[in-house]
Image 1 (cartoon, helix red, strand yellow):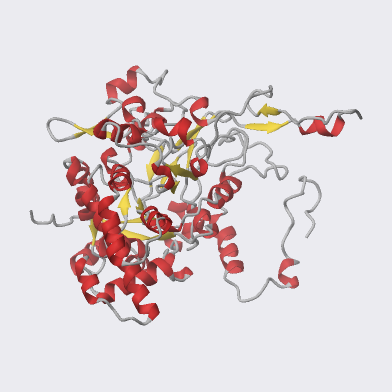
Image 2 (image 1 turned 90 degrees about the horizontal axis):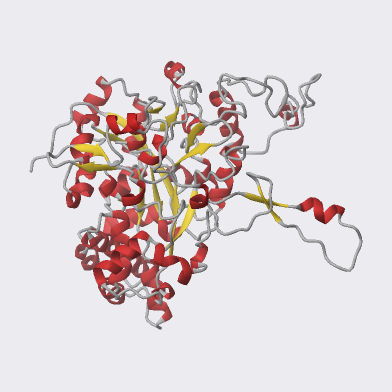
Length: 550
């Protein structure tokens, strides 16, 4: 079938994660928590979390859409409708949305009674710091958390509830036994997918969720949000949360104040494994619905067709006609995200069957196969061993296929073979045994392409992994922080005293000023001088009285 000619061109900032590099250290989760959800009402909220697979995920069994009713489904006529129901259903359930994860599906956040350690009288017994609920303040028992499945902890008790495992078990009877965790485990970092066809946005009765035309980032307008929570039901990834203090919905903002000044997201910046890539892709917004309505087996190919060639003169003409800046066009041409998704074809979307057209993609891990070979005493880098193991280990491949290709194992196998070929080819280059051109041809690539992919996946520098155009001054008004989903306690429009003194909680457009300064300090050749630091005010301990100390 001939490719559809684009009618409009828009830009989307996307992310690719190389799962082979994730070591499950949770640094991304912790830094995101400290930056965005370290506030009252968001104790249980993790915009970024790292899941161990196999495992139930966070919230528990979020992938079970028969229960949670998230995402889109295809109608008999070939159209799309929300799995949770259309406008009439939304109206009937607007005051009570029963299809919601409960706090127990996330976890009840807790602290410890440290005061008891300090104030306990002298005695023969050691004092105990009992866990206390951050919600009720009462004693609690710790039974679940955001990373409860970490490194297959308690796998024999919990993995049976993994929706993908349950599906595979149904298909293969007793073929799956939980001895395979010895050879099959990987970490899956998750953030909001910032979808091209977001079901959360379509589910919101207030129209509070919107997708920025400048970069495709999906945000929540806190002033318009009325706390209906229909968006939580609509999101199949369960990456929208309810702030029980403000009564508003909150979600990952893709660190848009950083993106606007060319800085990567905080999870990318702090990632120990350097597994994340950020870049711009161009797409045709008028073709999104058609692509999302494709047959399930064709969803991956349909989303691939959505992404346009940034070097195509016709695409460039449409982009410029739509007001796209030259910086954005050049960033799209150098985009590592486009290269990994469309050029090398090694990145895959998370659950394309939800039909939201997600824009956070993943390179599936080759490590389970390599680890098993090494444990068995085989040469884990030999191409014959690697290719044979990929074909033999159908359970991991089937699991990955249910995650990334709606069950199409052939696509996953093809990606793993490319990664295996790259590993084996580069070993030959490094050891001086020669460049195996036949190995490259076997996976449909050239030796030059394999080396380019290696440089991008293994040794790419900061500026190659993060190609982000800065916001333009002429568009500053459209990018003001009028809809930041992360206001201070009290919520938008209340404007009481914030944590840093009087009036500190009022919304002010700080992104450009603050994050531009941050970028300058991060990229400076030397540490900040004492003279420059003397002009900065120390706000952390200021109580709003007198002048803040330098």
